[in-house]
Image 1 (cartoon, one colour):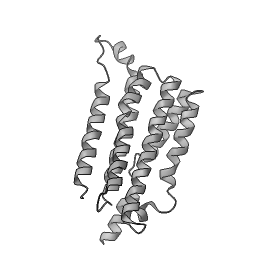
Image 2: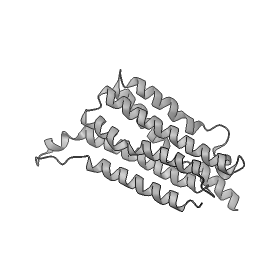
Image 3: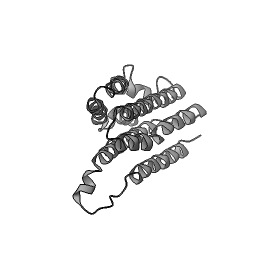
Length: 195
């Protein structure tokens, strides 16, 4: 099976996730600055989640460039990733509406952690299907430090949420900043194979 349907379906789901997140931001009932100021936690949580969903979309796009064929395991692994991404509007809304309270911050971190886990599972399914000499396997290499750091930092953020939600937020933001530039390893590997 080709990868076109997988890409199109994933793009559609991610577009809906972003749309739902923005629709969760309620318009203030007054026309004063004070009405907007009250929304700052909701807006900041939206920005963080928009960036995170955008990072997953961007890296998913790059990773699928290395895919030659799609099998059932990859389809289910992709759905697993989309499931955790689809919870982002809920966890984002809960965190923003409750002004970054400890439990919503921790649950948001769990969602981020599970997105990272499911992305890694999808990556492993693709490598398993295409072989250890595939472009993706070569690009990722044997030590994927950039792909493994989020597990540690998100876990620390979840724990930190109960003592310092601000520290947890900074940990979550640090991973977003680290991944803001897409994983160029795949582009470099595919580029060198085509030459």
